[in-house]
Length: 240
Image 1 (tube, rainbow, N blue to C red):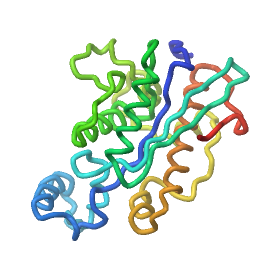
Image 2 (image 1 turned 135 degrees about the vertical axis):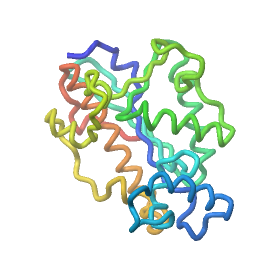
Image 3 (image 1 turned 180 degrees about the horizontal axis):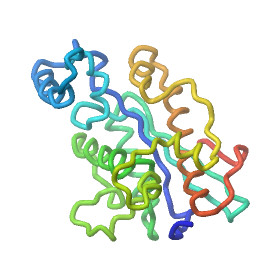
Image 4 (image 1 turned 120 degrees about the vertical axis):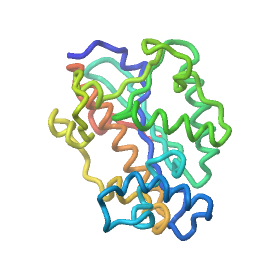
């Protein structure tokens, strides 16, 4: 059992990101040079690869990527009678979806102490969101922003960090952790490596949203399992 957090005060979330451009050929010259320098640190001892061949990885870096979907969910009800309410912000206009998410987050955290929870959120989702908001000129909500805060003032939870129990060597994927804990994982028609192609080539953002929402549900179920609570039944998950 983990230290108890009021589950109704937690916003579970996940983001999906893609490179700024559909292909390396479309990248402006100045940005190509910057990516080549970044890629140089990623390609050490990998002579078979080039900055162009690994451009699909640009989406995981906030300077070279952008957010196309933010899915989040809150858990309501008492133990054994839980339900989950899901909402997603998505589309081609990153600034617009970030602004809408920021406004929602400010309302969510307006009246009482609230928390954010994601898998590997402290290393990826939370800082990525802050960086892209800053780049887009969107106000960073207080709950998300860690600047100037002491560690105990940051209300960020991370299921991967909770699973580490102080072990700094281990990286455990969401799928692996779910299987280890016996949390059902819905079968997906895409995975993270396919998001950019689905967005740019197939232009099927709805598939990305579905994939992102499923990850949020899995994060919430893992958190409940870690706290010794029953899982939420599929029919009690509501999508808005």
